[in-house]
Length: 65
Image (tube, rainbow, N blue to C red; front, side, top):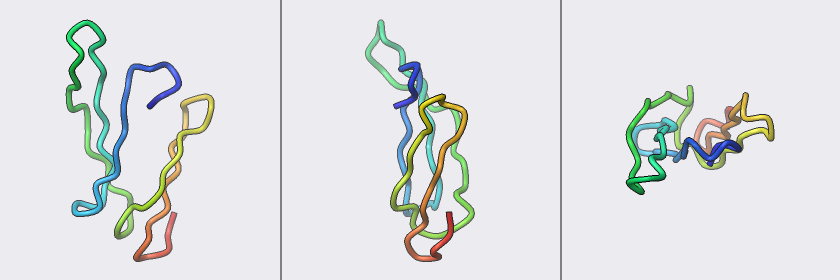
């Protein structure tokens, strides 16, 4: 989750991307914002820096980040 609590992220290994959802706290739902390619295969781990300005991804099958 983004530090501001407004976005949720998930890795999508089948599509080799990070998906971004906006959080609607009133409805308790998520809305797709974007699907960002990770530039490698099988995104395994990812982390958002504490400021929320960068997202780091490690790709398992291509050893890229």
